[in-house]
Length: 102
Image (cartoon, rainbow, N blue to C red; front, side):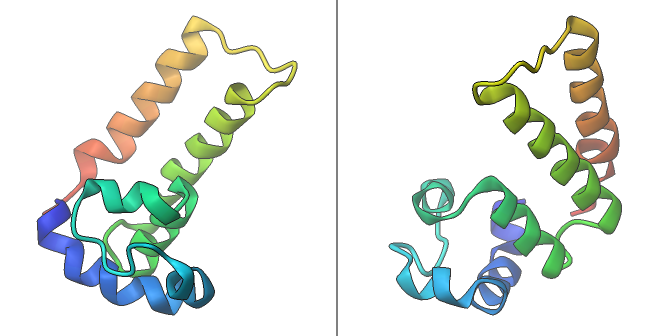
């Protein structure tokens, strides 16, 4: 998917986050490592939505699960059970992975 939609992503990046793009080490995304250099996961997902790389429903699933993951990953009283982890994975696979059309 990276190579098929990379032009769309790179075209949308400076439009969606002009200030961040201007300061970025990698102003043009060429490989997977470039994503990690300046962009948060939520920003990548937002750019993908704006560039029509993911649908509204895929965006919502990704955004929702990034928020849940962040709640569990940072120091807090949040407890994640095995069932919640399974639901998390099921939601992403069902609503994102299996619905991607390249």
